[in-house]
Image 1 (cartoon, rainbow, N blue to C red):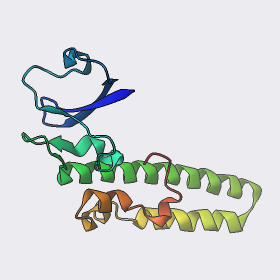
Image 2 (image 1 turned 90 degrees about the horizontal axis):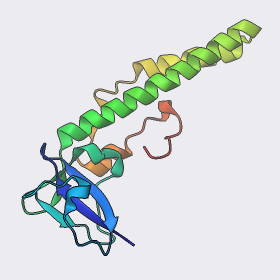
Image 3 (image 1 turned 180 degrees about the vertical axis):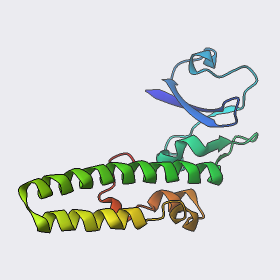
Length: 149
């Protein structure tokens, strides 16, 4: 069995560390400095979406919250990376279709690419007011949402 320790690092970010449930020693193995705010996470405790882990913060009273400006930047970066990956796929598909003279596939790839380029990923996350709403934003133009995102 493991125990989840939630603590605040020097920058104020919340960090989760797993340790054996019977461990009673200092938390230095998790990198928890002396005098740091920390607490045990309750089994089944509701947490913000893991996809926004970098935006988790731990208050002095031990409550867990999400820094929304940081979460917005994380999500914009994820959307941009996925759009870039998808654009690369479409470009390769377009080139293959052109090479073999398949104008239908080439046209479809070019149209999908145009939709992706028109997608304003800088503004889209601003529609969210909660971490859960932000993590739910995934434009259909990006295709299926990757596992773990």
